[in-house]
Length: 421
Ligand SMILES: [Zn+2]
Ligand SMILES: [Zn+2]
Image 1 (cartoon, rainbow, N blue to C red):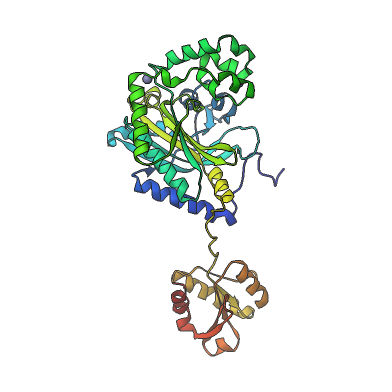
Image 2: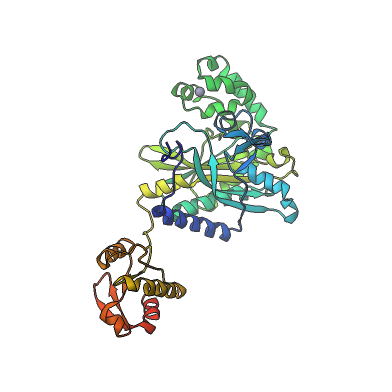
């Protein structure tokens, strides 16, 4: 137990760090280009924030949250999603006063959900998410979707398509709920327990059920798109025109409802076709009522969240990983134990010149040092010691061509720095 990570968690080991950094760098660069600045919020929040924000009846809140009492007897919950915390910070920081829209992203935010362990589902995972506060136009969703597609293509993923839907607003959704309940009528008794529970509180989510018998039942259910009010309808049509104008392929999919209560109007998913199956890589949508609902000023908003582990897995599956960088470019080998200190000092000189360098910290033989230099991908080994050192020189070995040359100790640092440029 002691040496086993808790179920549903995964370490990022040093050997994988470059994959994460590469992805994070791309995310940061795109966010900056599109005018989004980073926000960091605590890993835990008051439980009530998620109960009221995400919704009392959602799976996340009822089944999946890590909730505990702290020593001050407060109910605390580890973030089960990223939006509620960002909204809380937007309100608490009075960010509406800084001018709208207020565009922000979070990166590498740990997200905790008590999921049933199955392929790819982690109990702690990390998300990149974006939120845009204050924009009521569908250009907001179009921007978020465009950015996501740009990112996913940039990291090498293909066969992507955008699925969009509108789930209406507090004005038109109740009419659809009524129509859906009427359609489900007696059929609901043959559906799964979860669907039966959702019938009163949130019938929309019944469309989302993965059980075969339930899927079959809702196949001919009325579509929400036929019940949208004029405002929601116009918004959805404008969004489609914007996506088309940006050449983003999309499908209108009335089955997308998302598992969070706060969405209004637009919801979307990016689907990746792998084999016959389409898998949702990420999702998001508009949540015009959430800021006010949590006690802030009436502010339209939209956002998305995407799991980093998930994208990294797809990058790997697509064989689109970036090349692993060397750990050190120069390894300073010491010939004899009396050379350990001079090698150590010279290594600092190289680092000061901006050269990724390392030296022996284990008191190894020269042969073992060369073996290690190979392992860390060093392009050059600089050997200090022996006759060369007595002559005031060092020997450089090109690890690729195996060529060796002798250079004066004063010049060797700069020479290596120049050779690596
Ligand atoms: Zn509406
Ligand atoms: Zn069901």
